[in-house]
Length: 138
Image (cartoon, rainbow, N blue to C red; front, side):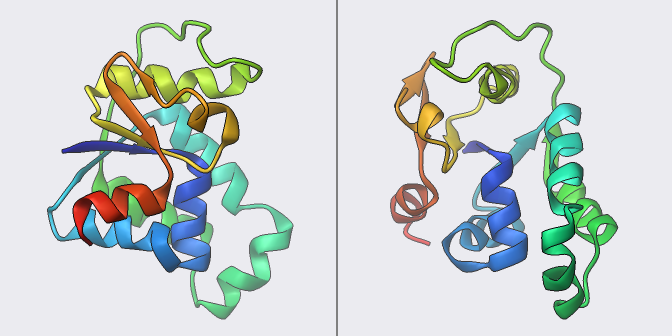
C-alpha cells in the first residue's frame, strides 16, 4: 500500500508522536510504503525549522537534519510532471495531490480540511491519520 503523508502529518509524527507516528512505525515495519516529493521535503524542512519548534527538537535530542534524514530514508521520491489546479480553496495543496498521483498512491493522509473535504481524487483516498491507522489495524 502506497501512502503519501501531507507535511502536517509528518511534522506531527516526528515532533509530537501519537497517531501520526504510528504511520511512521508502520512504514518502518514495512506495512506501508511512504512516498514524497522534493517539494514536500523542502516544505518539511521549512516547517520543522520554525523557531517555535526548536525547543521541542532540543528536548528530543533531535534536529531538522536528523528528522529529514530519517524521513528521506523511508520514502520513495517522485517528481510530478505537472501540478494541475484541483484542491478547492487552497492551491498550495495541489502539489500534494500531484505528488500522490505521480506516486500511484492509494492514500493521502492529511489533517488539512481542504484536502480532507475532497475525500478522494483519481482513486486515491484522502483520510486523516486515525482513519488510516484504523484501516491498517496498527
